[in-house]
Image 1 (tube, rainbow, N blue to C red):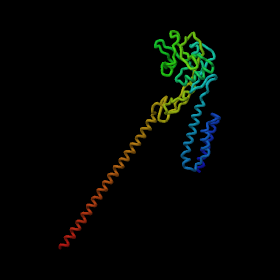
Image 2: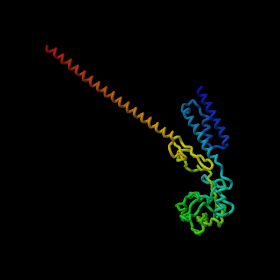
Image 3: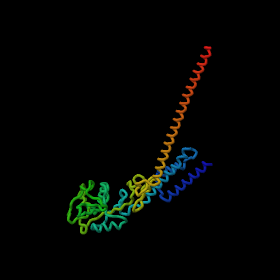
Image 4: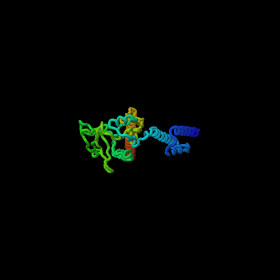
Length: 310
């Protein structure tokens, strides 16, 4: 009877999963298909199968959930190139840096491109610019006359180990807006241009999936891209925007776990102490019994000796 009920529950969950799959995405990974087939063919007569059944359901649900969050993020807009969670757009027309900045801001949540790694730099040059035979394009770089340094729009300085050596000075007095200049087949440089008078094409960028290839949740939770932002779904023990601290439930669990261990150790110690006391008392009783028995033998021997003298 119990076995039939479990089989019906198994079939019910399988149908729920199938309906979910059909509604969320028609093409799914082989991993989910394999897990579903394993659940479909699972018999409940085996004790180990019964124990692993809940675990397999959890694996299926987690896989579906992870895939669902990935496909819920829309693809890049037409004309944009996708790379590492972000979308890049090369303008078809030229404009000034200020006009380019305004144009980018009107496209979703874009801005003039800011570069963080050498790989991203190579992507923009080789995938966005060179195929369109574009030699120069405005990027999100500004020159600070007070600090005499170049800064990306997100506040990072250009003068670092990654890009600092690529900076070429160009009309410093009037050129305060940054441009990528493909000087030759082997040389690419960052240069300055006049923000209001010089024209060039430009590259816009917006983040498509904040979670893509990043460990934003400190390895203590699951990152979910929510359009213009991201959210961390923290594991049981953690909380915070990036799961950076212990949750109250987590602390309570840890404290309870420690108390249980301490109580177990105290119980073992008391049990050991009681057992040791009992063993010592038994040894004393055995020694007393031995002494009494020996004394009884001696007394009997003395009495026998006295009687023989008479």
